[in-house]
Amino acid sequence: MFHISGFFDEATTRLAGQLALMDALGVRFLCPRLVDGKNITDFTLEEFNKTLKPRLEAAGVKLSSIGSGIGKIPLEDDEAYQSQLQKLANLAEIAEAAGCRFIRMFSFYMPPGFDEKGVFPRVIEKLQGFLKAVEGHDVTLIHENEKKIFGDTAARALRLHQALASPQFALCHDASNYLQVGEDPWEAYLLTRDATVYYHMKDCQDGFEVPLGQGQGRVRDILADLQARGYDGFLALEPHTAKYALLRRPLRLLPFINAKAARACREVDESRGLSFFSNVTREDVMRWQHENLIKMLDEINSFPSGSNEGGHYG
Image (cartoon, rainbow, N blue to C red; front, side):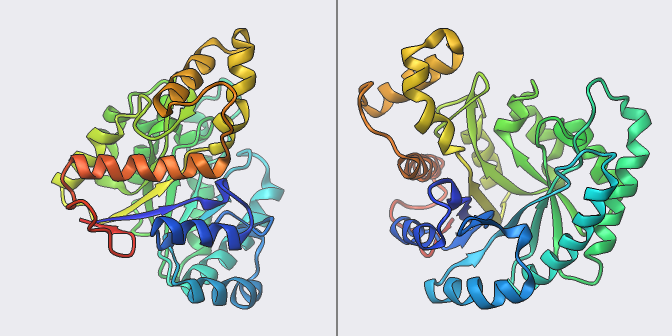
């Protein structure tokens, strides 16, 4: 069964707006990142329990994962690492308080031209520190293949999973991110699927994020295979709404800035029947992402049309 979630801060950073949009779409799972202008990583357990948890419960919303930036720091920044160890221990408590199993994280920014063999032991050492920070908590760290980190390729992400060999460490697949480091997202999916427990619904064309299914992410093929394999987990909407919503007009007006991105914007506009002068908001793009995902799920017959029950499909 598929459970739809999303980074609804891409429509608005205000929790009230996020919950309103989720209610309109029938989505009941949130991946919090920016909440009322503050990153979820910076909330204390007391703040979460006092200011966020009651509002989530009142709205009938649960958390699919904590959208943290843990590990999104340079490998050799030990001061930032020590700070993140403390924040991660706190996030583990927040996750448990929210009944949330997953915490999203990364494997450190690498210097240009880094030596994979040389840095690998240090990466593993620091990731083991992250695992130590959540020891004793019923949470799993899910590694996203962000570009420019150690695990930005499928092979390196899988290598981390195999080396750590921990039940509290698994992979999160992001097709757009794989494309942006020159990898085939379908091949990356096949290589890592047995280690992957969570999927970001993000697509891109020639390095520019576009609505789901309108890029090169092979998202429909991935969903079809997940259904065939009996996947029971989350699909988290993450369209990176700002890029298209804010840049479509400048790029179409001045295509020489980035010809491929300008073409992608024009093709999205045409697919939606929009003119150059049409207004597009970040909330619009978030709605399109959800709409396109539902269409693809319908197409692969994962659920009869209209069978959405609380954001669950299948």
